[in-house]
Image (tube, rainbow, N blue to C red; front, top):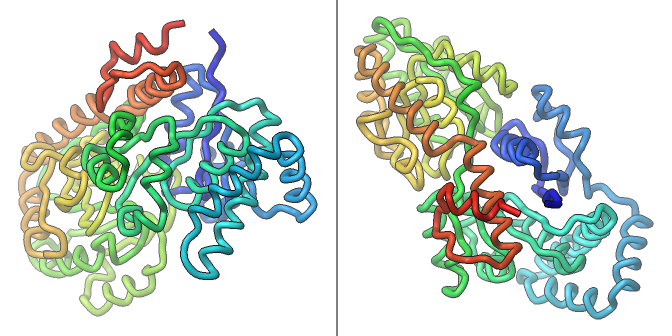
Length: 423
């Protein structure tokens, strides 16, 4: 059986915040899929935090910045190869333009980028293109697939894409895609609001995942309050609320410490808020860290906190749960599909520091509860969020779709995957 040869595209790859894409590509390669990575933009150096990113950056084809000669040559070759197909793709690009001068201009940029990508896909003999996210890079992927006359699919994450679904034409992208991979049932339901009814059967649930074997189980003893948070330093992640909770807890728990891993646009404002609340000495701002360094910090954490206002299914929660660290997160979007309230952690209302502080205090006080939650979290990740199992599921969906086989169900089980992968 000939190995699958596919391309992966994102807007910027690899990033420190998108390790789940790197893990998925690696898992597919382990299973015999030939994965070529492409990125619209070159990765900024602050995201190259470990050997995984270094390796992927060297192997990735970057569309931007191109020379005018490169763009002209790629598009001329595509036009001469199939004038009808080229004009058809150009018409598709124009039909999906956004309103206003800027919208028109950006659509021309997407078409220009798609031509470069299509040319490289044809040169490498790649027959399928998979894109992560449904925004601008997915526009490029759809147009490149049309130019190269190959199939494409995409993974839709949320929540940001659902703020502007019509701008990014979820309807047309879903209609043209071979299939759509949704990271949760909640995500799938939101995409279904905008997708054509006859496309729903091609929308599957495939989780982002982690490799549980890389994470050591944390032991829990005594009355300890070492809190950990990982992500992008933005107010929408609920960090101002977390700092208010920290301020209310610090008198009762003098050893309380919060470690923040990541960086982002609101770092300075958050540091200022920490000073005003009198909790700055209790917070460690570490910036971006490698995957190995994050795992090391998890080994020393007592509680993982993520009070975001909007999320998909956060991979950082999977990492914490794989490490046996109990979590306190907000009850938003697909988080409840990962964290079971009162079993593997606590789910609290977003935007309210009081229940957040109360849940953290319960876990600080009770090491037995922390251990029980931690064990349940590890079991949950092993069962439903193992990256190898999810990559096999994605591979099975792709193989079946390329063979025009249906009936897989929303979340195909292993027996269907095995059938799809047999020669």
